[in-house]
Image (cartoon, rainbow, N blue to C red; front, side, top):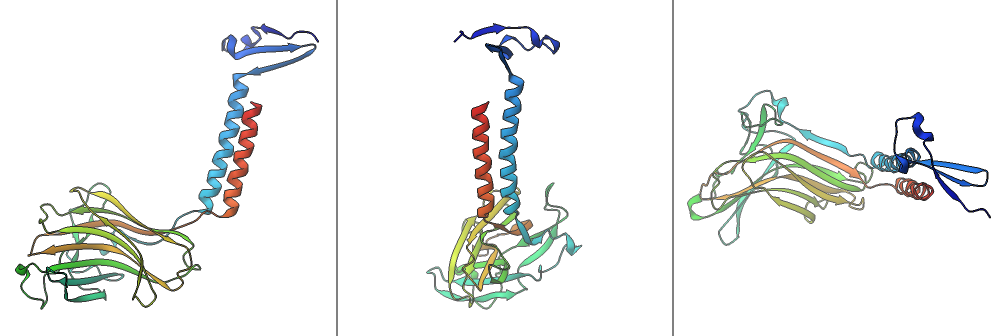
Length: 283
């Protein structure tokens, strides 16, 4: 068998010079094979294309479906004393020791919330929603350290695998806290999955909101499709005492369902990976 000879050639000079390392001839007998970095790059492009195709297939199967959105622009004016349906209010009052005193439950559309203007940034538009503590009521003097928890929320009743695919349910929103919050004040966003009769809370996700300027927040819940008839709640809560100032401004609220990737899409991605490996070895 004749020894292979490595011959450096300037046959690539018909194009823009690309260097000796980029144009090499391997000769064995009468068989000549030329392999350039251009071919290697083409193979790598094929690999990347296959991987992107697999990712696109998964993304298509897992496309988020938004079934609630509110940016408060439809109100057309500031000063409304409450946001109205589908927003609901919930108020709970407790003694300093934690004993329940009174309140009202989800379903009320009145309460301490409003449409405001002039509070937004570049992404918030002209109008925003506002939630603040409800210090009104017959529950006594607020200077005795009673704690009031005031919530603004959206309830979605009767989750099923038919109307919400198994995967995750996510609330995204923009928020800004009122400056100079009191020392006994805190603000939260929350998500809950509750039983059909509202008596049991199965899953919760609480996030304390901090910061002064507009920020992005989110709450995510898993939904496997087995909670047939379950109820979903997403919203915001301000916790205050002693008439301390407290408020949160919200905007661009969306609730979306992100289905879990199907077996078919995962298989397609796996096949793309195998082909990419084969091409990489051949390159």
